[in-house]
Amino acid sequence: MNFQDSDIQDSGIKMQRQSRRLLVTGGAGFIGANFVHHWCHKYPEDRVVVLDALTYAGNRHTLLELEAQENFRFVQGDICDRTLVDNLLREESIDAIAHFAAESHVDRSILGPDAFIQTNLVGTFTLLEAFRQYYEQGGLKEGESQEGEIQGVFLHVSTDEVYGSLNPDDSAFTETTPYAPNSPYSASKAGSDHLVRAYYHTYSLPTIITNCSNNYGPYQFPEKLIPLMCINILMGKSLPVYGDGQNIRDWLYVLDHCRALDLVIHRGKPGMTYNIGGNNEVKNLDLVHLLCQLMDELAPDLPVSPAKELITFVKDRPGHDRRYAINSTKIQTELVWEPSVTVEEGLRQTVKWYLTHRDWWEPMLSQEYQAYYRQVYAVK
Ligand code: NAD
Ligand code: DAU
Image (cartoon, rainbow, N blue to C red; front, side):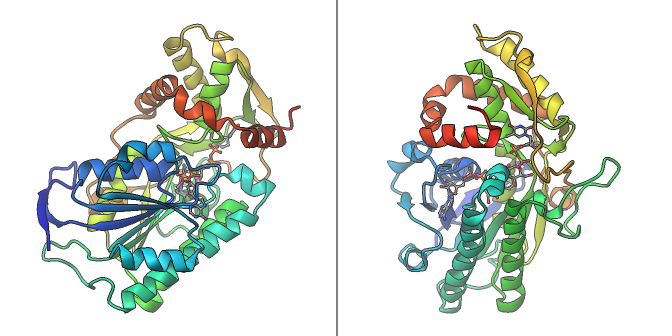
């Protein structure tokens, strides 16, 4: 067994950790890739295997610098492919799965829910079944190490959208808020959460669920609000704000999210759910104004200036949830985590990243993207 001293938390608590062999699904997507970079940088002794189908949302280039490393492997494949998953678990002696792979965009789930059911439900089920069989056949050791670090873990990365929509005066979602998903996306994620929970209760599989709020930061596909607005401002295109722009989201900087997931993998309790939020509730319209100001300040020679002149109110998203807000007290107290940046600081970093990484996002504005854009915004 290979033990190493490593500072696993930013809170300063030191522990001896056992090196790990991680399977990361969806590691070429936005959060998955940030997580893989975080993990490989912090724990170079660990084996990291990424399984990703490279759908429209996946980008292998994001992982290019890691591919040269001996401890890293990229596998292009579908989480619904049981044989592939079985082989990877055994071949790589995996002891932790960090499951990010999903269809993740609400607007796409409204246009075509099929892929959401397939990947989010059938895919999660396939991974759970494969991991269960592997676990029961002694593929990994049960229990905890001396330091309290869990030996095997299936981390299911989920969303606050499973809890439904809040009114302005409602308290933020906690881990015991009843599920009330409203979109095909959130319903498929809710279903997958229930499966993960059931595998803990029925088969004692060491599963953990995290439900987080809206992430933002580097490597986010430009269909999501923040990168879409940044790129449209650079191109002088209109900034489509849904409905009255008063919907509220709780913004979480993706690197803060990755730090939280790191703690959950090392210290989380099997069978538990942890909510992860940014403590940053903002109305969409205010967020777009903030982005416009930052772009005016940081991007020289914008085609339209001030950028706020591009703001356009468009038809609302069907079933648009009004407000999400996360109460993160449990992870803050039990695992000693807190978000490190305000939305103003995180947005400034993010805008700078999009300004300096045109080579990353420009190729993503593909014909598929243009077709999707025309369909969702009904523009010619
Ligand atoms: P993303 O859409 O950017 O990336 C998803 C990745 O999964 C892509 O690389 C894609 O190629 C891969 N993938 C899709 N279907 C696959 C399949 N069948 N087999 C293998 N790989 C497949 O998503 P994201 O924003 O990084 O989200 C990651 C996870 O976090 C998702 O489970 C999502 O539900 C959850 N989540 C996201 C947010 C957010 O704000 N982005 C917030 C809460 C929860
Ligand atoms: O809350 C967590 C969820 O956050 C994740 O589970 C999802 O995977 C992720 O996509 C995100 O969902 P949202 O629907 O909240 O994110 P999106 O970026 O699509 O939209 C954010 C808000 O901005 C939402 O209220 C809709 C609005 N919006 C979005 C777009 C793309 C607009 O007003 N105009 C737009 O063009």
